[in-house]
Image (cartoon, rainbow, N blue to C red):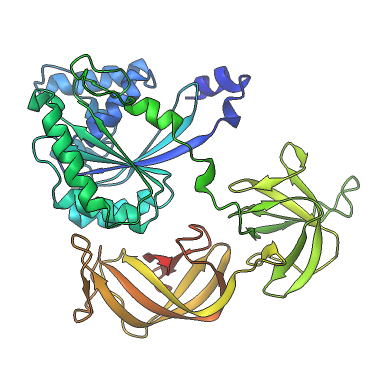
Length: 428
């Protein structure tokens, strides 16, 4: 991988846009094979990796190389032929860099899918051409819509097993469209593929002349993701204060962090929350020097014109556009822990760079992740359940709704006794 980076470095490789995508599908829909095929056909695998996979396939008595073995990293996964944990894979083409989160299909690993999908720009949802839209397909689509993933690509796989039939493809497309119309999903595309044979993954299929759309790789390379970030509401959670204290930068005081949303420029009127002090942006610095504007998701250091008290956990916002400080927070949470929430138990809540203590005041309802039905009677929350809760925090948090801003609208809850992350939440 290092060699690849060095080769491309001069060609502006490091400035290339990054697309994060997640894969979801039922157990044998071929997610791992698809990712293996993407890596193999886009020439993103080293020869020694391929040799290892070829040897493993031989040992299993397979006639051809099993590309799924490229992604199933855990021994249990290879032995059982299933994906358990989220496997992250990295590859690049001359157009874009990619991070793939390969997430499990089993219902008992819903939390792993939520983890892998929380930062994704795009979800690939695999459907077996023989089985069509099943409960797992609906569940994964509902999670993608809950997590506000902007783009969904429905890969109708195993087309080779239905004789590359256009009718089979059209039927699944129609079924999926009628279901997804009830969800909050903006951009849905459909591609008929065979991950095993390589049809329409990287190379166009000779067997499906009736399909006039793009291949999967072309789609991923050309998805417009620039407007996926919120560029309207300016939010800059401060991570740390930079004070070099050397002669060259004797008076430098910069506030460093990653821009959650919006665009900042020198001269902008800003307010620091929660203190409410106002100032102007004096300069914006990056590792490569000063810049004239910064936007999400850049990591920068901002200097202000006035000397005011700013520290980790504070947020720099535009004066005329502020988040609502709130101590009563409603959120949809995915429960990640074996032990369900205890009534009135205290947790640490982490929101952007800010920490506080929180208590679950009320569980409003559990969501049936297959039907979207709200169960207000059953409040017994177990691992992998998704529910709506009311939290009370010890200090006001500077929150936006998750729908408006995926960064300032997300929280995690941590059990102080064990230091385990017990829930991930989206603020309503």
